[in-house]
Image (tube, rainbow, N blue to C red; front, side, top):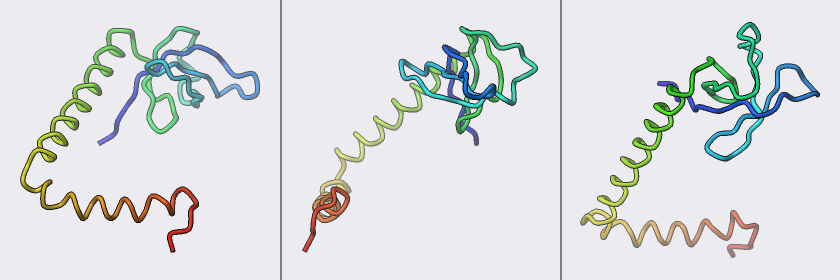
Amino acid sequence: MCLGIPGQLVEFMDEHEHLAKVDVAGVRRTINIGLLEDEGLVLGDWVLIHVGFAMSKIDEAEAQMAMEGLQLMGQAYDEEVAALLASRIAEVARPAVDEAVDTAVPAFAGEDTA
């Protein structure tokens, strides 16, 4: 399964003709638009992005539907995590998880764990 993220073109990059900046839910990202060079993209157009490449030009309604779908997936994930944390499994597993995090976090922060 591929996940496409909608983004709106906000800037074409002077450095390379196949690069552009898009706005994705308020965050600006640089993407490759080379696969859509025959689409006649203009600022304000919406594209569906997968792993940094604009895969297709979409309209605003499609962009809105895609974003709503992504939000629903995120909501389902949040609900599943909440259910797990409220379950007996979480009560049993939490001490081991907390210990693993306490041990690993200093190593990621560059601190000495010894």
